[in-house]
Length: 165
Image 1 (cartoon, one colour):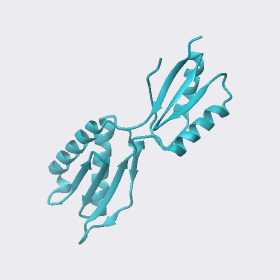
Image 2 (tube, rainbow, N blue to C red):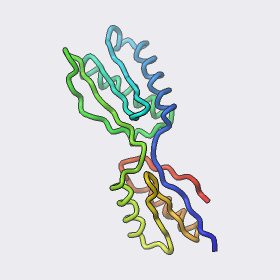
Image 3 (tube, rainbow, N blue to C red):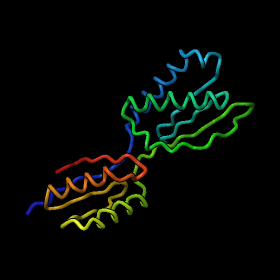
Image 4 (cartoon, rainbow, N blue to C red):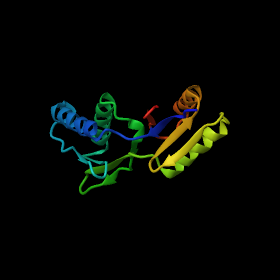
């Protein structure tokens, strides 16, 4: 009897994030409310971090709104953004760090495993494999049910389902 499975992962396409940052900076340079302002967005691909810097709170909020709208348009999960507190950056400038969640944390993975097992579905196996989960079962219908359940719940991150076989 064959076992069917799928993987549960999370993360953003870093190229799309890069494109969204470039589009956001282009819009900031063209917008009237940013005229004369020194606003920057730095994207560190290796750490999956964004550093925003603006002249004041108002411009920081506007800069963040522009960035989030560009990320949404490029299908980057905004749920995976961990936005830090605003901090002073010399003079009246304000800095904010945003971290992109690229993998499922161990605690979240354990919570997902516990929740799926709590559903008491027949012959469902959930295995933590590094930063992803593998859900397997002899029944495709049960896998569909698990997928639906995982989509309904709020895990604090955007879940992706792949390798369905």
